Length: 162
Image (tube, one colour):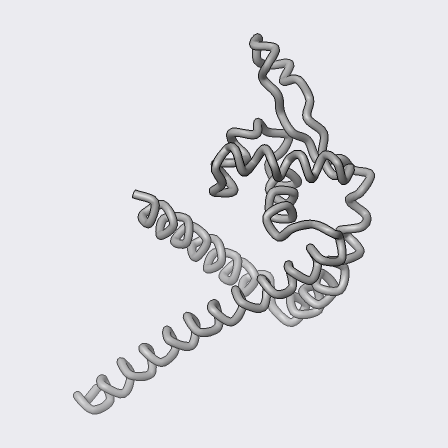
């Protein structure tokens, strides 16, 4: 490979990496907008929807753990949980695994889940169509990229906190 060809290869790679970064930024913006629409339709604040999603992924968990996962101050979490509980989205219950009777965990209630499934239905259907165009190996590669990007975002956020 000549020096000119090598330089062209390097330029192309930089351009591709820039395209990936720009695509991720666009995806982040569009998903934020989509989630705001979902929050509005469900009559939730954005942060409430985020916490509800964390509970659906990791719950039932303690309010302290939820606050840490959501990056929220515990006092803020109390307000979020109060709103979610009033709306019938979650319940707080005594944690039977901890002897301290004050210990509670938060659990998402399944009764309201169909509302969210309906709101996310169009996006889920679109993702199913998109994924149908990829082989299993390509989907594994995409999943690896997304998981590594997620880990990088967590690390970057942790570094900002220190």
